[in-house]
Amino acid sequence: MELTAVREAIEVTPNFEGRPHARELLRVAQRAPRLGPIALEFEIAHRLASRIVPVDTATATARAKLALAVRKASEQAA
Image (cartoon, rainbow, N blue to C red; front, side, top):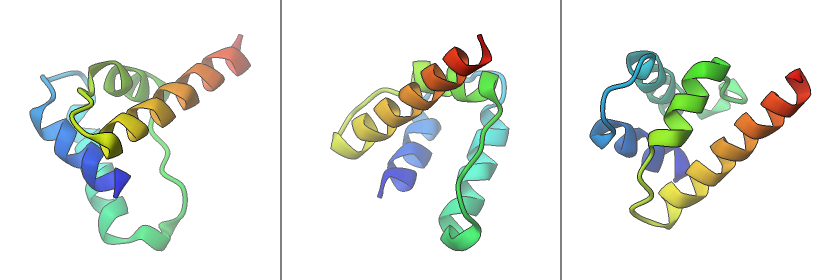
């Protein structure tokens, strides 16, 4: 449900560097959910997390999870 929400949110999110890559990754993940965890490059994940507009609960939850993952990755890198 969250993957669908993020995929739809990307469609209305203003252009950002890495958007096509994020769109394709989510498309593949949605069609083959058994592939395992989804991994975005840090910069793309950071840009996406800051641009998603939470229009419903699923999108807000996905944005919060993505922002938390970006924050944790940033802290671990420091």
